[in-house]
Length: 169
Image (cartoon, rainbow, N blue to C red; front, side, top):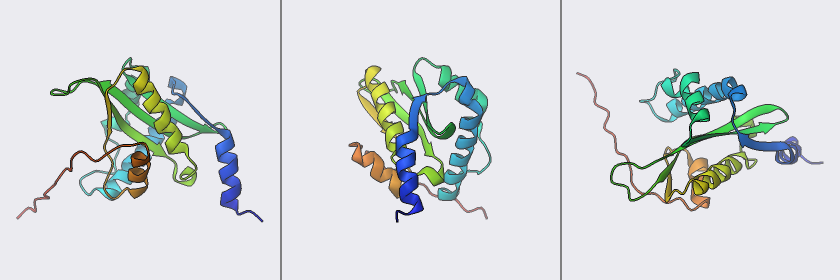
């Protein structure tokens, strides 16, 4: 008899829809972004678990509506279970356009079903249509599943960010 996870896997994969986010999804994306912030705060002692400006409806809506920004949602049976957010820019010193994946998050119970992969694929395709020459993403060193996923797409480590936490006297 197949396990519950195996049954859910077939159901999830058969029913997942990746689409451009619209304003109607805003509150669901905000809730997911707040969960992402809590996950990040668990991996990084310098990140507060409280919502930041990057989880605000105003900021997310700006990215939904932007010309050089994209937000995709993953929907399963009418429920938004994940999202990705990225933008195109040309940072100082870069030779060409850069795509940047700011967020890619999937609800914990829906992870490991290929939803994150589908979100990244759609984001990469959008960047290609925008003519970017490279795509970057920041991933926490402790987030091994995300590191593996990005590496499957061909992402390579370019630099490491070092931090010294200063102890107050």
